[in-house]
Image 1 (cartoon, rainbow, N blue to C red):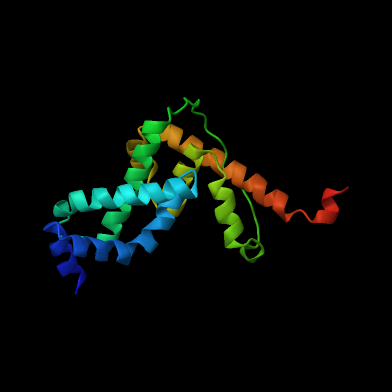
Image 2 (image 1 turned 135 degrees about the vertical axis):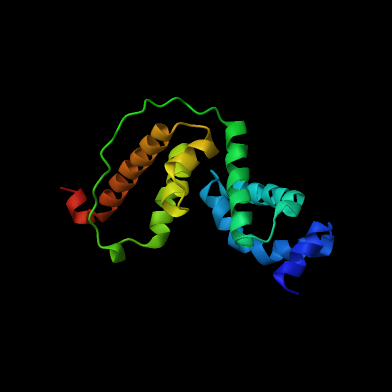
Length: 180
């Protein structure tokens, strides 16, 4: 069955088609949930909620653009909406921070380590970093999604980069150098 046929069946609330769609895309969308969740368990919950939203809103998909991209946007929005309901964003003074310059050999840093330190960022910094650096949203789009100002988005990104830079630099220091 083609993806178009599957979507049409899902629009008719066909449970078997919904199950098939879930099995087809859950493994691709779970890493997106993980990026925007504070824990593995929360990411699982967010994925379930996102699929419920996808099935509820699938009639709004008009076969324009990538269906996977459409679902990804719902996943991101679902995770961020749940976060907004659970947490009151603290007001952060908007200041223009110089973006850190870090020159490293990309082969020196394992991807697993990068994902781990990104996951350790404070929630809002992690979300802004993921939206901007990994998912390609503009600061204006991030501001709208997260209900913050564009300046706050830029500031949060700069602070996230500073934290990541410090963690990367500290990981690059050789064990012998640390004992000096």
